[in-house]
Image 1 (cartoon, one colour):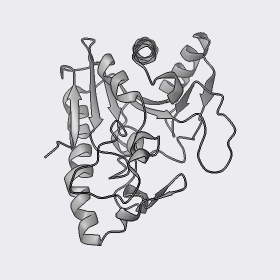
Image 2 (tube, helix red, strand yellow; image 1 turned 30 degrees about the vertical axis):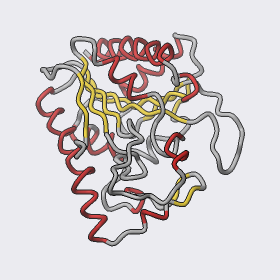
Image 3 (cartoon, one colour; image 1 turned 90 degrees about the vertical axis):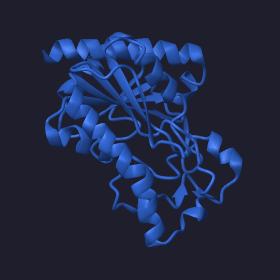
Length: 241
């Protein structure tokens, strides 16, 4: 049986913790989502490109990453467990018919994947007392449903009430000549379950980054953004000191 999380890097005090809720498109064999298999290669199933970025970042001596190991269609780790969307029944126009399950089956799935993942994130933060937590996601250049307008941002910075680290991130990324979205393509004030429970509620410094997926579908782009984010995190740490 697959573990609900993957950890890369050496756990030690301080440093950077990279948290990747939507790292995988894996669907366990005992779960039938009732969707075409090709949907699992799309953005509705996972955040394309970010798993390897996190792994490359954790090759540095003071960076640790934790990755969710099942598809966001199995359980969405960036939700609260009592939200209906924690086990989604639709995503960007696709009906997830296999997620029409009983309350008992829902609780069993949360207990198998959701709670162990979040418990491990919390224990890493306690053990490391990291200088910074980076919540890492990626976004599709355009959605299947609604507007087909291309999203112009190459990278976005999200935050909720705590803004200090994210303002430092915005300054750094703009200096790198990137097209940067401040609270784009989503606002961290609207979608913030993991950042709030795992960082903001306990006074932990954090920022959340979204990278446009067409820039990170290949190793070159993934390694480029891994290096960029390490430098960004170092800049933030210096600014917070």
